[in-house]
Figure 1: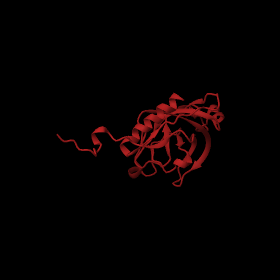
Figure 2: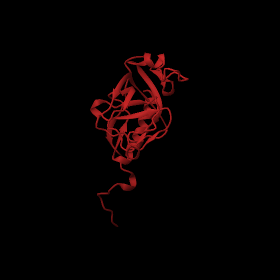
Figure 3: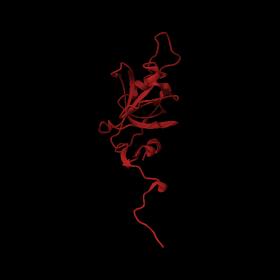
Figure 4: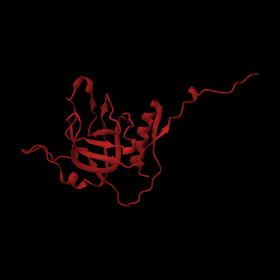
Length: 180
């Protein structure tokens, strides 16, 4: 199994423990033998920024429609988006309630989507660098609030699954009594 994906999903799993459910890596075999394209979020746009403004790099355009491995920091939001989260090249915390549509998102960020069957799952924030792997696309998408995103990554359907969280030993209820 891909160690990057395993690390990411185990980190997400750790975040679910306190919420009553968790995510767990499923065993999976790759049907293709090609390694994913490794992308860096900070390389989505040409630098320095020229007179035309932000211009996408040829590498990010060629990666559209391909399986990629992407590392970044999960955006910490007050109100998590169901079935998705954002990755950025640096840690970002959004305060939607206080700041409204104003945010500190860099121009280069990527939406990461769970399988459509998991669209109602809340993904808890995972601090630190997160690495994910999936189908990458470069396409303009506008959400209901008018925010535009160009970069998207669809996780595989079996990347994560819901499981019951284990109850810590000190919180278990004993149904038997012991007497002397």
